[in-house]
Length: 90
Image (cartoon, rainbow, N blue to C red):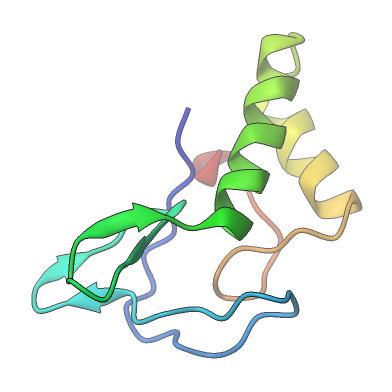
């Protein structure tokens, strides 16, 4: 399962201890859960990977995509645009 959000213009600071690095490097857009390292290569974004692991755990327990999106929203998680996750992003 992968969560993706594709707002190439969002470089704002999230309400977490981690900041959002540039979402694109040239024409390469980073998938949710990844960030660009200083060498320009993708690496894991610990903040977003935590959310992905939570979603995967819920899916493994049999939750529907809608339930997962609702749970992430209930727990206060937001996508890169600071909006609640929806089923197409889960």
